[in-house]
Length: 562
Image (cartoon, rainbow, N blue to C red; front, top):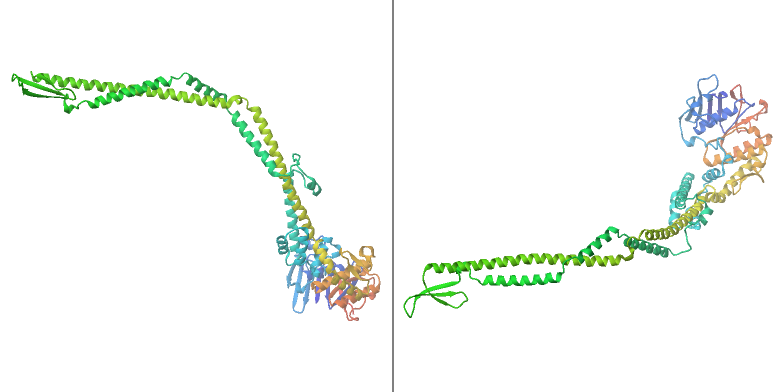
């Protein structure tokens, strides 16, 4: 793999071959770190790898006095280039032709927060919890199998992002549940506060039905009180008027007697009228002329309807007509009598109905006034007391329900807090990772042995050790060695094609420096190692050792050493 660097920061020109190791040596400030950054940019396709420089400031990455800079990475027939100041990457952009950020020194797990360190390591050594791990752990918290299945479905695949997203959702759920608790209680949530919280109005009653019955009873009392006290003075006055009207009403007994008598007279008159002959029957008299058996004179035999036969001497036609007229007058007189009786009946019926209605209404009003009794006009205090009792009973019931709801939310929050801890990077993943650290520590021990250095390892809390001491307590040179071992190990695991190691001069002794090349040789990784030397003749010749090539950089130009 070849690297060409032109006009990049402190490098004017450098043609370097990673075959497999390239050692770029030079005095301090000669441009070694610029070479390391340029190669890192090409290997990662990141273009901008210098801290504090953004893409809009990429002009700063072009060497002073030049207009453009570039880095070209080639292997066999493929290539990738990064141009400046546009900071554009072109050509092959395949992970198989590159390296991770950790492999080129753009990050290190020692510099990460514990959670991030666990997440990254878990992905490297594939130490993620299984479904059975999750089911068991979630079950221990108190969730059922359905919840465990949902959690597994959310994190299935084991990627750190899936776990972190599920972890974030659990925190969001917890925040919402705390909001519900606060909405009920009116207080800020706290686990201890929530465990002891109870409303001021809460009593010692533990049976909700008893409290509900008290509320119902109080409601009924209010309804009764409002109903009885709702009789207004106007209503009472109306009822009293009805009673007074009944007292002044006509006595219905004589009116009824008169009505019955008149109805009887009317019936008789109608019967008499019906008994009279009709107009066709004339006056009801039928006359016949016959000779008198005694004297032979003309006789009139007068037959009146329903009366004895009368005999009279017929004198003339005029007498018969007069009799007919009298009968008509009798019928007319009787018709007048009937009409008068009918009018009397109508009048008496009206008087009777009026007197009866007034009497009945008065009796009903008197009964209602008796029911009202002493409640009239005495309702406001009673209503106030009844409503106050209802409010008190309702407040106790509401407090009982709020306590139950708050406790329910608190229990859910407490369980969710355990789930959050389980899903967190330092939770179940950390515990599973700790179990899987054996293989990773084995690799670190193998690489350390190849270098001839004390073994580097991570303990169960993922804290790093160099030999028997924590990395933080060893010398700067020893810390650098521990970092290098871990960097090389992770590059081996993630499939990076090369590593970039800068500041190798931190190893002050030749033996340690030799160990670095030994471990790189063992892994077979391509490597760029940048190391400061005061003199050119002190630089080891990698070509002679069969490890690659050594380069000396001076005056911004890197040249291969023979």
